[in-house]
Length: 276
Image 1 (spheres, rainbow, N blue to C red):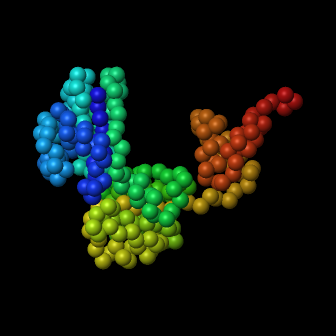
Image 2 (image 1 turned 60 degrees about the horizontal axis):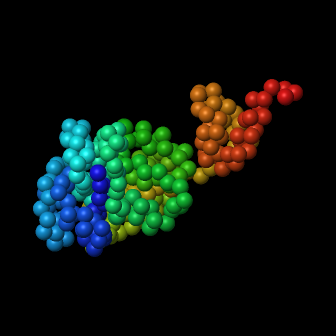
Image 3 (image 1 turned 30 degrees about the vertical axis):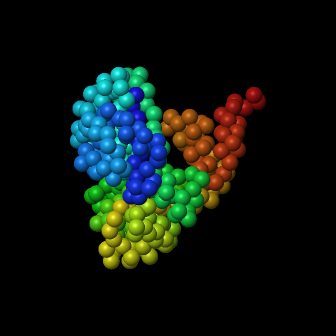
């Protein structure tokens, strides 16, 4: 069995009893950084010394098959340096290989910088999208942000402290300088901080220098006011591009605030032959 184990993102007190129990009995642990995992075992006063196998971005393709083969006979615990493995951290490749091989995959839930930042941001939490790290190159970053300009859901990003100011400036350019943003820094740690404001306000703050682990939460775009006829035309255009009618209606509804059901029914009515 493959066991994805969420580890603390800063505060050791967030380590669950189940995590400690699994690590106390583990024989094999695949770790993003074996040195970090060794320090975690020591900090949690775990005397067990499992076999540690390095699993990181540069070797996951090669290691996945080995770990899945081991997991066919014994439990293999997968950990990242912080948070849930496979979410913006190594682990996805192992899970995909295990699923293909018919090996059971489970997880020990725990601390999540994404969910914590979303919850305390003060921005809508009912629908959100996690976008991970933005590209390092400014041109590529701006291209990604422009593509998200009409995204109606709250967006969550990871960002490097050294690139935060420039990323916020690009967000202001792509989303508008008045889009609400929350920058969450050092979550669960001693100097935890949340800065809320518009893109322009936060750029000024970030230019003064920021340290620590950063999560940026961005308000989704406001629904675009369009007429029913225009929305129906958008649905028809998406269907013409090969998207299923139901999915096309849902996409346009999310962007416009109109009823997905009404758009679906209207598109069906237009498709029916006259007199039927």
